[in-house]
Image (tube, rainbow, N blue to C red):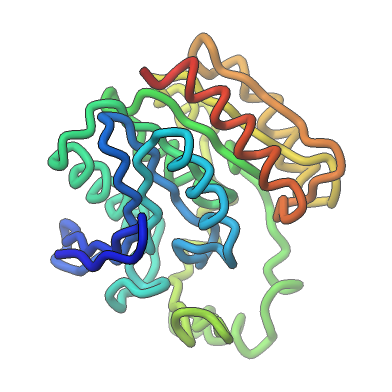
Length: 258
């Protein structure tokens, strides 16, 4: 099922739990496609960042799919968990294969990079990961969420995160979503990759610097042809550097996604 809007088509994919994933699909007429996974509680637009990058990929001749995890964006309501996020990406990959795409690349930003790495298999030809989460990192969640929210999480095991002005009002996460970051086995995660991986980091902001150092330590675990690139001046959002991100990703895909 899909609805057309200019070069982009809105599609709906059923996941393995019976819920519907909403996605934007740019059809290119080629056998190569790039699937874009959003950051933590983000949606398929990522405040316009994914729209801009997807258009660059499309103009370069790639099909593109950007999707919402269930519980986010326009997808069905569901509690967001690490396992569910990975299975949602696997459902999108399955859809792409069913549509005849034989060259599949993944693109993930922040949490979406972790989802992409966990979903990697022999079906994936290349990955570009931006602001990547590639190993265990400790976040100070009390600085991000209110005392009331953290108390709700402690009491019930779930927390409601308000998403004002976006495609939905609230995203519900379980405790495992937050605890997951502390328990990532980097060697297990990165050795799962069976294709070349491009990791892009910025050099501004405490979070991005911490993530960059973690990725640097893990490069030895990635397949031959993998690269780490640093964009001078960029922080974790990369808002002013989207063209640089797209340029680097496209150069990498051209060499590794055939």
